[in-house]
Amino acid sequence: MSENKPPSPAMMLYKAARFAGFDAAKGWPVELETVSLACLMAEEEDCRPGNHADTWLSMLDDAVAAGRLRARSVPLNSDDEVIIIISARANWNYVARDDFAAWLRAVGEIPNEFVRAWLGDAWQEEALSDAAPWNTANESGAGELATTNEVRTAFASAVGKSFDKFKRALEDTPAWIKGARRAPAGKGKSAGYLWDVAVLAEAITEHYKLNRKTMQAAIAAQWPNAADSFAL
Image (cartoon, rainbow, N blue to C red):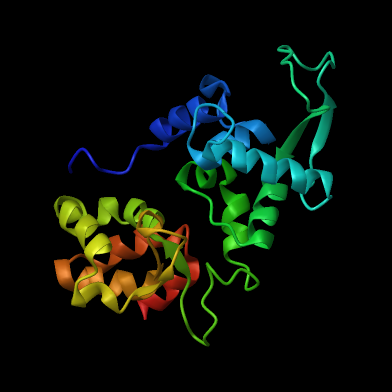
């Protein structure tokens, strides 16, 4: 694989820790403060006025203040805090995985790969809900949907030496893969698309002449319904 291969879980953890300011040696935290979440969503190492993280922070704190995002609030000068930062904010607002996943779903936002790695099962449970249209197809019999980043990571091992060609196909969408592509995953080309996982698995297996059991194993854990459809 090339230098553009998907990061390992360990590398994902350490990169996320740099953005969100937690100790990677202790593993993924069970909750994150809104400042950390803002930096993680924006993939920025700090929140500066005018940068993308600062915009996310305003959005998150407003949601907490309005009661749309449930959080555990701790006064800035509390003994629970080791570092005291001069700020106009009255509290640290800590958000748990399940609460953040539910809020993302409610506002129609798709988290990046770092946030999804932190959310883990919490995001997958939200993604499989039929109230989440960006991850579950509306039409009857349609399979589960996933973002470009998700399928690129999930299928990396299955496609093996063809990974670079597969990565380019997700970006350029040649005719053989176009039938699996659905709506854009977000604003801008960098957001990629949503893909019907079962249809994509069929297209990849046929195009690269891959083993069906290997392909099914690549999707079974994250998209069991797609795996069932693919096995038919």
